[in-house]
Image (cartoon, rainbow, N blue to C red):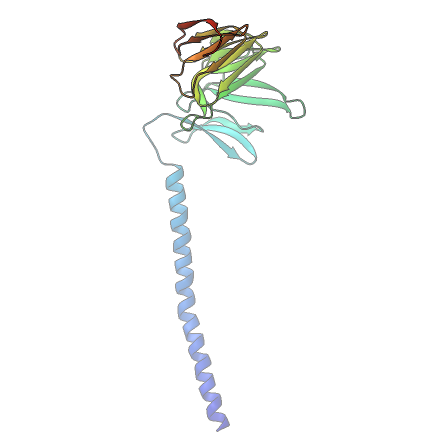
Length: 242
């Protein structure tokens, strides 16, 4: 009786071994196929070619660089700071170097595809950042700092407004417009047309509402007026309140 029980248990054990011998290779094969499929999917996604010319940042071994839409490296990944590309269709790459995080000091270059610094006459280059949902950076102009003053250049490095402003900032919910400060006076610049919506002659300038088409309320000596988003004076600065 004891021997028969042993044989039954042995047969069960042998069946388990057979089952494992059969099923383990199948599991391994499925895992290998899954890994191959995953790798293939990733590779196809990363090297997909498009007919649209573009530039994108890359990050390799802790360094930043730039590639184009065909996968060629334009700027080798040798920079510690992330490279900013304001317009992915244009070869204008903002590179920051010698960054001192304690006092927010750094040096900038604006490189093109030929690695030419298009803004060598300026100390710092910054993109104009917007908070709208469809646009991260202004695609027309960049903030260029020289000494302690700010100006505006385009993405080829051409100067559009001399570095004579104390401050240049974007306004919430409004793209293609920046608010400027010169001395104690304020104004607004249109970055698409490179003209003044409001020259820097006012005590304050504020948009009437959020949106690119908004007029602007201008104030001087407790008097208010209105300028259109194209820069036309709608109401003279002579009203107590608007």
